[in-house]
Each structure stands twice: as C-alpha cells, then as structure tokens.
Length: 316
Picture 1 (cartoon, rainbow, N blue to C red):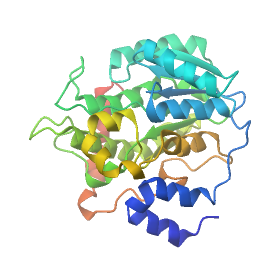
Picture 2 (picture 1 turned 180 degrees about the horizontal axis):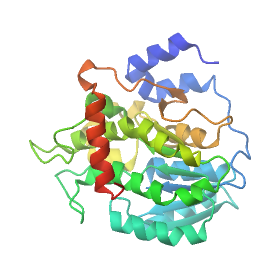
Picture 3 (picture 1 turned 60 degrees about the vertical axis):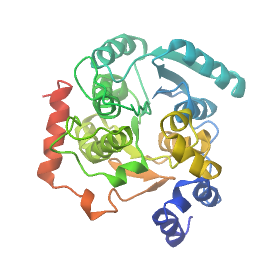
Picture 4 (picture 1 turned 120 degrees about the vertical axis):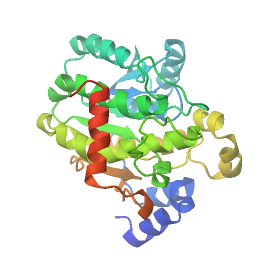
C-alpha cells in the first residue's frame, strides 16, 4: 500500500507527481493487473493511432482484450496496429474510423458499430486536440469542446446498448492536469470571446470534462456503467511535441513515456473490484478536482454547463 503522506506530497509538488519521478516512486507499491484481466472483453479506444491512445490500446491488448482502435486516419491507424501486433503477437486489434469531434460522424459510427459489437466492456475517450487558433466543427462547436466533451458524451450515450450488455461496463475520460488552472467557463463555453489560446481552450474543456464526470456517472448508472476521469501526468507524446514545444524542451528529461502515462487508464479498465464511479484519478488514486479556490463553481453554474452540453448533442 502506498504511503498516503508521500503520495500527497508528490501530488502537491506537481513536478514530483506528474513526471516520471512520481510514477517511478508509486510503481514500487503497485500490483500489476492479472495477465488475463481483460480476456474476453472488448474495449474501444479513441485517438488510438499514436501517443497515449496507442499505448492504452497496446496495454489492453496485452491483457487479452479485443481492442477497437478508433482513429480519424485509417492509414495511420493501420501503422499503429502493426506496431501493437509486433509487441503483442496474436492480439486481436481492429481499426475503426471515426472523428469524435464531428457529431454527425459520431452518430454514423455508433449506428455502424452497434450491430457488429453487441457487447462493449469499456470505452476509453482519449482523442485530443490543441488547435493553435479557434476552429469550429461542421456543427459550429469550438474544436476542443467538441473533441473532449461533446463527442465523448454523445458517443457513450449512443453506445449504451452495447455497454449495457457487458457484465461490468466502464468509461474512462482522459483529462489533463492542466484543468486545475481553469474554472468552468460558464459564460463562454464555446470560447467565443477574448484572445484564443489553444492551451487554455484545452484546459477549459478538460475542466468541463472532469466537472461533468459525476453527472455522467449518475446518468449512466441505470446501465451500471462506471465512469472515471483521469489525468496521465506529463508525457512525451507527438501531441506535446507539436503543440507545446517549449514545455517539452524545458521538461523533456522528466516527461513520462506514453506507456507510463497510459497506465491508469488501462488499470481503471482492468482492475477488480470495480472502482467507484464518478471520480477523478491520477496514478491509480482518486485526486481532488480543485486545488485553487478560483476554480470552484456553484451547482447552478455546473447545471448551466451540463444543460448546454446535453442540448448541443441533442440529448434534451
């Protein structure tokens, strides 16, 4: 069992907890999932063609799951699949083409998938973007919000029949420690005002994601779906290299590998007994959702954002 005081010290120091230093210390106290923990399971991983998503797919395949890799670019997905099969010979890994930011595409994807996959044990929403300038989708939604919040909510809702057919269905939302810097953007959910900054849009959408997690857990409790949000720490991924080159230069030696960053997502999918629903996790432990007083919000503000997102995806 990991010493609680040491764990909290690592978490509060940020660098100690979010880099490879934190996971290296904590890993000494972890037990690996059973080698066959996901045998017979089918899991869907979005944004699975590179970085953390690819590592999650590989981790799930290594534990025996049939892995559906949802990607926007089939060619890049096939290349990632080949890498995983080299690492996990005999794994069952399939490519599914889907753009989670495009709500029409999400609906078409779910309609196509449900007849083919009658039972789905887990959905890991990993797809992420950090656009350098404000970009909108075909439906008119800011791209970070659509990718990290609207698309995942709609896709999960549409896949509920398959999740409901599983014995112990789980949903994992890949968030970010950057959300700690942001409050709920109640008055500007779509980031229409002020100077647009991709890193801020990313962090704001991740804050929304975490804020909605308990509400999603309640909404999907009827289907016994466990919902978890998590952040992976600071990882050296293609997305970081492209979107945050300065951050990568500064922290490079301390950044986690993609596999290290993927660990908690795989663990939340495979661990037994089932983890509590509606919580926010990092390095296999429940974490606070606020550290700064300025990020706290009222129940009324939360409901405003919740109702906006439900309406945006056509669920009210």
